[in-house]
Length: 322
Length: 269
Image 1 (cartoon, each protein chain N blue to C red):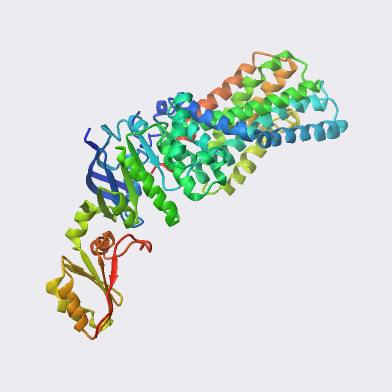
Image 2: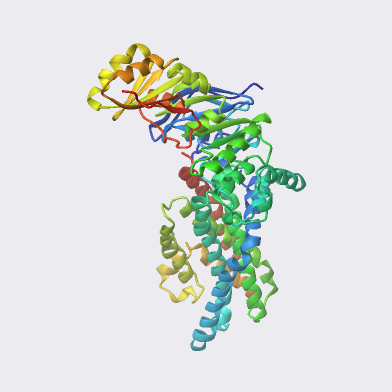
């Protein structure tokens, strides 16, 4: 089955407020599909409809070959969910959490035990198997929640902001695990407001804001299409921002103003633009870096997401020659 | 299974089908956790009623004449069994269920599996019923050991306690579906459980009350439980017990949709 999830004119309202305002998308088998957007964009609502928690208000949503409004149980048997908030059984041990969850799916005890050991090993939790969940770290709880979502060997795993609130090491460890799950052919749906997470993991993504899809495609294509390859971050006297933009207008594909910083989006080569910057007395400093999803989002929504300090993009600073 | 959209309350049938194997899985989960926590969990349920029995039976009882031909301790003993079972179910499906639902998000964790929310609610009710039967049966064992249970009809106690448990698990779960904060359960206990405790004929025969209060007591489920338990423990089994039993069964069936309906309304938007 090539198409795992298909939404057509999907809508969701809460008391008349449109949280999702008629969106269409398709998720292919084996893909890691990202849903990006700021808080309140409608990401969680979309995935909660996919895992059959919230009923759809309008349009159609088919998951693993079933309509969510028709056969939720058949869908839920074959998908795994990692919710935004950990909801583990705190009184139970790490292993018991997996075994109890296996029970909900009606998995036989011996099979569940074998599967639990494999998952504990895969997620580096074997040493903690008999610890009470209350006593393990935040990153381990998150990994356990993911392991729990895989206990029934689902065809599709939904992760709602899987790394929110984790330190950078734990986050990277989880990315590593998600990558190897993807290699094994598991279809992943990921919501996030970390743009680096999306560029690291997602084959395809949609960017949502206020319940609609602003843009969709592969991360690299989106960056190329919306921004280009390079971004010049220019610190300029606010009164002269427009002068600056005017002087490089023929060299850029777009720009974004944020206080005294002007972001210039350069399609290919930045050399010409840099010459102009060097010659402009009102430019204080500037730097050149590779374009990333943050720029795409900034351009599309006119506002930023949380900025990642440990970002993966390359960044080069030029000393200004005067 | 049909959509998760909240079915209309008047579509009764949809609220009885969640009594199924999926609900049993939820019960099993709670029993598993209970196995790890029962020492702290159960002691409280059992010590308190025995304190009542000691203080009221041995203390107050010294100043009270025999009632309907039995000692005061013997008179209140079956009522103490009924009330402790009531408290067990009411506490389980209010405070404890609220913690699972609101703080631990266990309901959310379970409904991501093939189990749906209505089955979760039914599983919780069954667990509250289990707690009720367990603590009531233990107290009954204790008072039997004290020589306060003359009749072997008392062996039917667990069935009455199961009915008791279902009634109060449901009443508590209704509040769990409504209350905004865990503190609000104080109203449930003050306005519903405590009056039930005091005016269901546990501590005095209701015929000492004015006629109107006697009739109002008939509306209290615990009153019917107390009548059943007292009659069974004393071996005074008559046909009119069937009416008390029927009253309780009908009550259970009528309010059965409510906890599921309210919980769905609360969690599923």
